[in-house]
Each structure stands twice: as C-alpha cells, then as structure tokens.
Amino acid sequence: MGRLQNEPHFHSKNKMKNNLLLKNPIQALIATEMGQILELPGFEMMGRSGDLYRKPFAEELSPFPENALENFLPNRVPMLWSSEKGPQPIEKSARETYFPTAAILPVGYLRTLLPAAAPSKRNFLPQWAYTAIGISNGERVCACIKIESSDRWENHYFNTPELQLKIEKRLSQNPQNRVLKQLALCASEYHCNTAQNIFYGRWEGALPASPVCNAQCVGCISLQPEELPPSSHERINFAPTVEEILNVALPHLEESPDPILSFGQGCEGEPLMAAATLEKAILAIRAKTLQGTLNLNTNASYPLGFLKLCKAGLETVRISMNSAIKETYESYYQPKGYGFEQVIETAKIARDHPLAVSINLLTFPGVTDREEEAEALLKFIKDTQIAAIQWRNLAIDPDQYLQALPPRKGQILGIPPLLNLIKSEHPQVHHLSFSRPKEFFRGRAMM
Image (cartoon, rainbow, N blue to C red):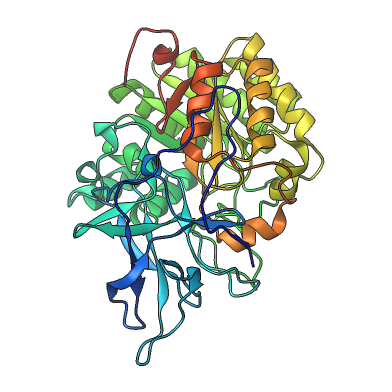
C-alpha cells in the first residue's frame, strides 16, 4: 500500500510557496453498489498523490466543473480521513459495500489529486483521468484547477442534431476516401471534437495518417493487450495515400474559419512513421494554398523524418511526453528503435527552423510533480525553448501507471506549486489546454 500521511505536507524549496491549508474540512463522498453517491458523516475527503494519501489543500480544489462527470471506481476500496483515527480504508458498513468516488473532467481543467483508493495490482480500470471529489456545505468540490477556457471547445458546439447529416453529405461526395470514413467513425462513435470539426468545416481538424507506431505506451488509447481493459479508440488499419489526405486537407484549409490541420490523432499510431507520405502531402498542400496552420502531434521519435516535414512546410508541433527524465519516459512509452535522446533532438530541430513548439505534457499527480521531474522539466524547457505546455490529464488506471514507473527519489511538490515554479522560471512559456494557430505564437492572434 502507498504511504499514508497523518499530516499532509509538501517539500518547499527555491521559489515554491507553501500550500494553503483549508479553513473548513471537506467532507467525504462514497459510492454504493447501486451507484448512489453519498456523503459519509464523520469522514473527510482524502486524495492520492502518487504513493501518498492525504487531505487536499485549498489551492488544489475548485467548485465542481460544469460538464464534469461524477462516477465511482469499481473493485476499489476508498481511503477516507477519520478525525479520530486518521487515514482509514472504508470498505463496508453493516448493509453496504462502498467504493471511491471520482470525477472525469472537461477539457481545460487539470487534475491535482487522484481519488484516494487503496492500491490494486489487478483488474485495472478503463482509461479515464480519475479525479478526487468531496463535498463542502452541500456543494461538490473537485481536485482540479482551470488552465484556460475556449468557447470553441464548449459542448454545445459538438454532437449537434445536424452532425450526422453533415457526415453523410461529405461521405457521399468522397465515398471511396478511407480517411473520411475513419473520421466519420471517430466523429460519430468516439465523439472526437477534431474529427467532428472536419464535417462542421471549422477550426482544428483531425487528419490521421499512420496505422503503425514505434512505441507501446502503457495504457495505449488505440491498442491494448487482450488481458487489459479495451482501448478507447480503434486504430486505423490502412496507410492513407497523398490523394486521400489532400481530399480532406484542402477543403478544410481553404473553406474553414481559423483552420488548423493536425496530423497525429488518438485513432492512429505515430505520424512520423508515415513521414514520407506526409512530406509529399505537405508540399502538395502548400503548393495549392497558404491558408491555415499545418500541425503535427507526435512522439518526436524520428528526427530525420521530422526535419523533412519542417522543410516541406510544417508550422507547429506538439510533442507528447510524460516526463523529461529518460527512465520515466521510456518506462511509459516503451519505445522501439528510439530513445528519449531522439525526442530532445527533434525538439531542437523544431526550435532551430523555427516552428512553434508545444509539449503535450501527460500529467499525473504524484509523478509529474515529483521534485526530480520538476528539475528535469525546467532543464528541458531551457534547452529546447518550447513555446507552450499543453497540460493533459493522463487517462489511465493509477495503479497500472505507477507500477510501470521507477519509484520517486525526492519529495512531491504538488501540481499548483509545479505550475507556479515553471511560470517563475520560464515566464515566456504559454500554459494551454487547446491547440493554437501559428499566428498565436507570432503574437498576431488569440484563439
């Protein structure tokens, strides 16, 4: 079992501020076998930060976000705080079996604490970013902070009644295009916003390009071993042609407001594995139109292929990473034929060309905010001169992730102090939740 703390604390050093204690206790919520979520009198909310279980601090909590989903963790034992006994596992009452409660956050919010569930080495949970919740004065509170807002990602813009008609119309115009068929699946069944934007004709649109990957991420969202929970997406099983890519890309760039075309999606492998095709596609796109932004979401594993895309006309890149420490990174990504050294090399190529470089930081309380992780991330930012961090809650069973990683060496700083440290040391870095067009990074547009 992870470590239990009777009095929560964080390590504080350099410019980090001590955490703010709560004036009033946050009461615990538990779930019953029937799925009812109830307040449990006599117990306070606890959260989990990696291998530590503790009460939350004020700066780690927010009112329950609109559009967040409330649920519970099956086959898990909740850990709650008793004013008499301290941290306690609460599995059953005389009549009920209890489970930990959790929230699934909307885009724009960053999780600060995991639900306080006792560790489990089996029966891993489906791939969601489980977040601790509690109740104060009758109102739900959530262990999260808001990174930013964007009206263009609000729920009312997506899954509208006319979506299916738009999908059918677009497919009828290009009935043989396999990319469009995949995007229709992603838009209608997986409710992918960027796939839907292709059919709505606006903003950031998805363009999957690669059926293969050179990493085997723990908890991959598009390909999972049979003994684990199923992946949340079905990976494409074909390699798109340049013509198929152009039939999707050109209308989106030429006809959409504020268009971004993003290669590298959840329904595919690693787009740099299709670098030869993408190089030809980007050259063909830019021969036809200079409108919009060409973006790549990538694991940055293939510097030579990436360099060719830069020369062809790629404009922005978002590099996915969970850590700036080689051992932690490779424990999660399980790379095949590359290492973290290639990620750094690719980021420096992007810096030197120059592209607008963001990192897609897969954030996990108790790992991302480890002292050694913070120091490595600050050095990575300095060396690569990235423009932005897109903060992403890592959607994975907490125990599955922690069991795959090396143990921590230093203290856990906390997510808010980590943010404050980065802002202090690198004030030029943007902190985002959403992709931006190239103009944003050139200081000419906000979106």
